[in-house]
Amino acid sequence: MPGTSVLLCYCTCPDAGSAQRIAEALVAERLAACVNRLPGIASTYRWQGKITTDSEQLLLIKTTDARFDALRTRLLALHPYDLPELIAVPIEHAHAPYLDWVRDATDETAQDC
Image: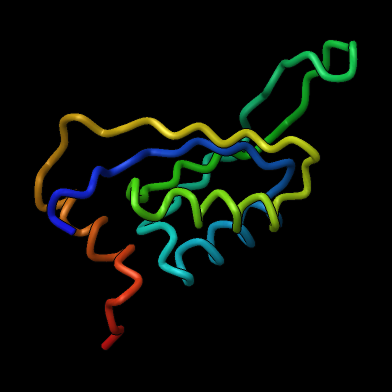
């Protein structure tokens, strides 16, 4: 696990309820170490031929490369959008003990005390 890459994933949600539901499930299932919810963002995008602006919540999801496929599968199952945003960016520089915590928190073989 020490060599596992840590990722920061971005995902937008339409409302606080869906954002909270997704965040809690991902952390509870050890697919994410932490999920930050940022309310009050405005997203402008092209969808089905129209330019639209909506209020959304942004999730900042900390996970590992080893857990990303399972996280993606679960997030897509939980998300209310037809085409959810899920972007993963590798973390190249960070506080090493924090990265170790992310790896430990997403270790599916770990036991909670």
